[in-house]
Length: 236
Image (cartoon, rainbow, N blue to C red; front, side):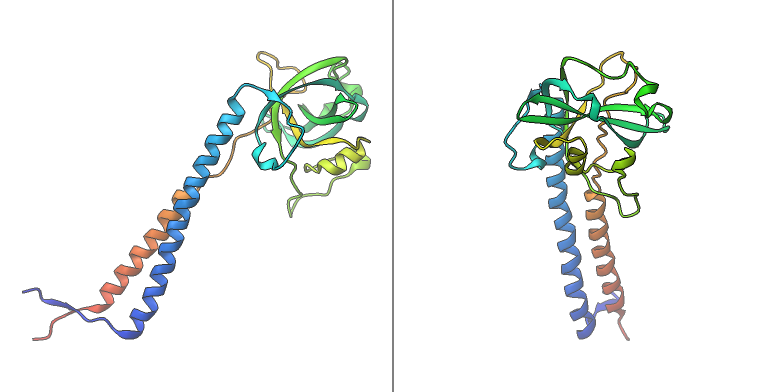
């Protein structure tokens, strides 16, 4: 015969059951989030690697346009170029160049043309970096973003920007009909001149599987502790 017996006690059982249900719910919720995140990553990959499309002028949801590959044609308004502090490809301090592209009399879009090192912040240090005349730009649409809680404020008067405030950047550029998103220009093959384009990084965090395993693991530990506490050796 089995020398041990299971004798559950009321109050530990009443405490354990809701805790177990809660942990399992968290685990299944993270599984749902994992499925959602994988679907989102598939959509982003399809948008970013597909053939470029025309700029969608009617925006319903900018989340649905994030990383969409588009092609626009227009003329750069070089007089209103802005610089945003950024770390370069090799970890060097520098700036991303943001320049409005005039598509038509009724629409402009702010282009992230690429990165330059710190010593080339001012236009007079890189006279060949600006592009004149009509040009076609292929790139990925990106959403504006707010200030990090520990980050500095933008300084429009000093042309020092630290986060993507498309509304105030448009005001500083003196344009009232700017597209609601940025366009990050693609890097041309074998083109290592400044500015260095292709500034989009696909670093979307997906930790939902780890979280799910953590919650399910805690549920298993809880059950184990409960059983250990309630399985006793039979008395003779």
